[in-house]
Amino acid sequence: MSVQHAQVVIVGGGPVGMGLAIDLALKGISSLVVERYLQPQPIPKGQNLTQRTMEHFWFWGVEDDVRAASPIPLEFGIGGATAYGSLLSDYNYDWYQRALVRPYYFKDNERLPQYATEAALRVRAAQLPLIETLYGYSATEVSQDEAGVTVKAVGRQDGRTRTLRGLYVVGCDGARSLVRESAGIAQTRNDQDMLMALLVFRSDALNTLLARYKGKSFLNVLHPDLQGYWQFFGRVDTGSTWFFHSPVPAGTNAENFDFHKYLEGVVGAPFDCDFQHIGFWDLRIACADTYRAQRAFIAGDAAHSHPPYGGFGINTGFEDARNLGWKLAACLSGWGGPHLLDSYSQERQPVFVSTARDFIANYIEDDRAFLNAYNPAIDKPAFERAWQERSNGASAQISTFEPNYEGSLLVHGPAGGVCSALGDHSYEARAGHHLAPRKLSSGANVYEALGDGFTLLAFDADPADVEAFRAQAQALNAPLEIIVSQGADESSTYGHALVLVRPDQFVAWAGEHAGGDAHAILARAIGAQTSY
Image 1: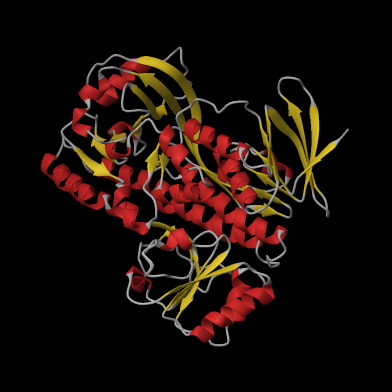
Image 2: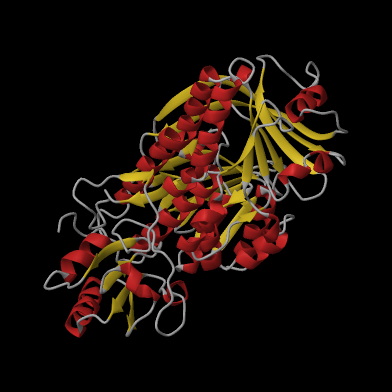
């Protein structure tokens, strides 16, 4: 039996796996992608793509295709609203307005069904000769040894068996990940003991009924009977197609439950409804205890899964891919240090733990506490005061979601820093944080000037410091683009003369002078040493 070889074998060719393959290929790394489905599955999940995700797509050369595939015009809006009791009740407010943090990112956000995103990524992958895809194949066995990994896959239509060999394997194969289980990686799970229904339907009348929510792409209802769990509507397009998910009684199936009547209750009025899909899933939050076991890595839903609250899922997966991509490429290209691959789990795992705790679970708990404390039928003035307070605070939630790596062994973060999803957005260049886009004295945006590897931004900096970084990068064989900007420009908000930026646009170090520390700064950034 012949064996197919690549540097990295990726099990799961959904959006995260395909994004990782593209990221690796653009860095000169070959991959074999095993994907069970011949075509993307037409279920409209993972629709909200953040500004940060669209930055990834710009670097991957797929942004224009993704935007062209969106059925919702950018000017329509990507925000949402929360209502009490039903969508047509007297109480609602705007929620999770991503536009508020737009200035801190290079790209606008986008909204489209996951299958459309996945289709665009497949087209881009087909343009890159370093990516070989095996569509219609399911991985059946994953093993590793001192020299590499072996994956066996079987064709779902013809039963043909293939043997794949690589130096590393990455599981992007979903919540029931074969790669995770084969590598012996344990999970910590928080089961909510809640059966959820996912519906896709068409309605000609619903847009008219919900005219008050013009420009809102998703709508969620807080109902006292559901103890903080959302009844959630999302637009698939600006016409008649919607999706909906909500808790339903245990034992519910498509035949024994009147979903049309249920939807009318959530909306607050009767309307026409033609179901395209009815499915079910169990609500839980799960996170792998580590994202690496020797030569095996996991990303996306294989590493973490949670209910679709706030659009965190697919975007977190893409950030996994971007973080892991440059680190695998660095090690396979010979310049990554011995600690670099361990830093993937050390950075990304606590960020998801924080996302699940501080945002997803916190939303549920906060909503539950509100519903238990206030009821307009019992004390309307008290309810309305509390509702207004929630409305006033809703816009702040998006500002505090700022994944960062302050506690990473790779960055020169603050003493006592931790990797977390909690933070604040700032134009200042801070070690461990995402670099905000700024105009350089040349007129170009800094994102248009960043290199494929590390980038040193020098703003009226001491030429000796710049030269020290150049020399030490050569000594460490680390790719370093140097951008010198002279005179006043927007970059003054970075607050430092020197800013070292990683390949994933996070700041590794920022300061006024390197002194004799350029080697130590770079060595730590590439995982060659863990102290400074």
